[in-house]
Length: 215
Image (tube, rainbow, N blue to C red; front, side, top):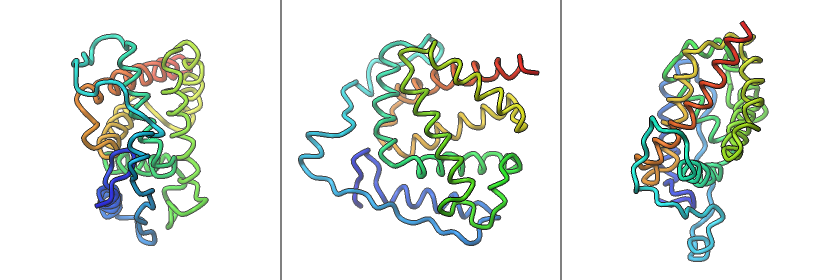
């Protein structure tokens, strides 16, 4: 099958989205459309728009240690590949994984009750795009954590009013990790996974603490 520049076989993504939809009993009127992705050329391999220069395999990443420069490189460079899928596709896969892990979470999103919840311009489409954009901002700002903390805290406070509780952050984190594993394929090595886990721990802890202060 054709392989996209970010390392993901097109057919694999298509099958993954379809399998998630089939596990959604409320999904009736929408079918996953196979992504249209650019053909690989030798030039795209040599001059990749999202180059990966950091070693994805060695050394190992201690998930319990503080975030270091290599962790940031691992996350930023691999997320640049994932971002090539498009905000809508990335967000959709993340939220389909969230709903698969916690079907009750749909009650938090009015758009999830729509017959064509993933249709163009739908509430869910708009929401998932905003979520991915926020995630991209957080990842882009990892070298200056002090600057992104207020953004995360403000986001957490707003979500208190939506009924989000601390336990939801584990569900979201798991969904993000599962989605990254599919998108990155063999580039989702153990060091890459652990680097993302470290980053998510910081994000979740920051947001949970801010939410608790709000209460």
